[in-house]
Length: 132
Image (cartoon, rainbow, N blue to C red; front, top):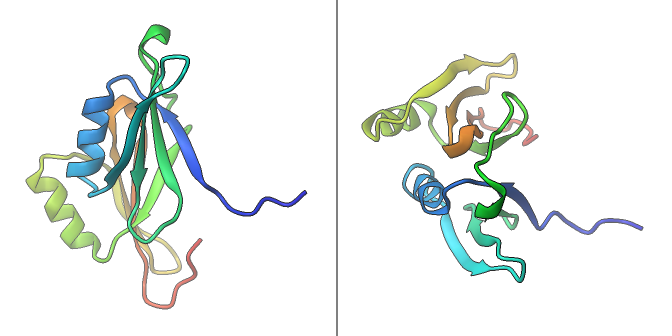
């Protein structure tokens, strides 16, 4: 067996509308589809620019609120200019929780928190740097 490609990653969330608002307004992601699964989970699929993979948000109110353990999961997104990104986040009153930090390869990154405590890493890479 050989996997062909990654299709989506699911993250369980407490408040679907609040989480969608964050990903749309702060990160500019697009909602491709919203639906309710046969077992009652509320689902939303988000498109990331320049990527085929989707982020699937899942809210299952019957299971109670989501508690994300610290440093368990994060999403990483590449940005063109970290300084511009920081200014845009500040204008939206989004707190930077770590960074900016520069790596030995010259990349720079920061972290912010999404709803439910999921971390989001925003990375600026120097031109010609490997995309890992």
